[in-house]
Length: 367
Image (cartoon, rainbow, N blue to C red; front, side, top):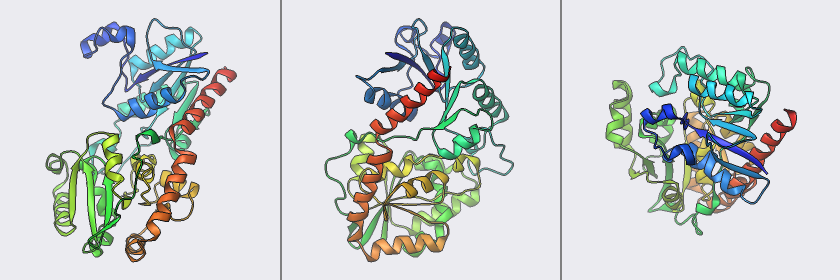
């Protein structure tokens, strides 16, 4: 059996980490980051899917012998120093990247977190160049990583279909309004401005269902012009705000029916490297997707049968796509089944877990 240890979000279980809030118990059990999607989606779900196979995935324990250690969105000098010590012991080092920290962004980001600092860039490049293999969460990001490490592979984000309600697509159109779902950090609601005119044009025929965190707090993070446009947008488009609780609750909401949307500006490396997960979670509940041409969304559309995912490049295309569902609601169920089929074939946890294990097997064989 091959044993693989995971370090998540730079949480290295070592004595020095006791000052950073680590429980002493983590020296024995590993240091999880249970509140992060990285923990349950790119580690725990994968580990569970591989139980009973030739692979054992677990949180990194300093006293355990491993075949490989995965640094999952974990970088910085302390991670690189550990990676070097592991390499000296013959243990393979894998770096998993989910953000483009590599490409300098010279413009003005609408949200500070979407522009990497020089330190983040230096840290990401250092561990990327050192790693035996880099696993990127989008095909586009894998291409960026390949500039620094030729052994860069794409393993997509996954969806645990066991969490999906048995019944989906309850009532996609209610009282003449199409239910339009979006989920994400409230601070990123400004992305709707990328298709603002289209949504305003159909405001009398849609109902936005926003699954997010503290909207009032997010407003303070937007520039004045953005805040004013968004407040006007939300005043004109009927909407309901649902507090995000967890993925199980999110999927239960999506099962009520409608479509999933993800408008995005394409002027930052952060957005260009984004994964499919924002739309595939909805697609898993039979919600057809409407999305901007983010590279990962293009991948999802190309992997899907007609109707499962529609790419909208302009306000006119957004308006046409939204109107088409309003004019032909019967197509929603057929397209919803196509969306679920795409997730089952390409993004379901078991499928992705096998891809992940195959990537590690190739790394060990090459080493």
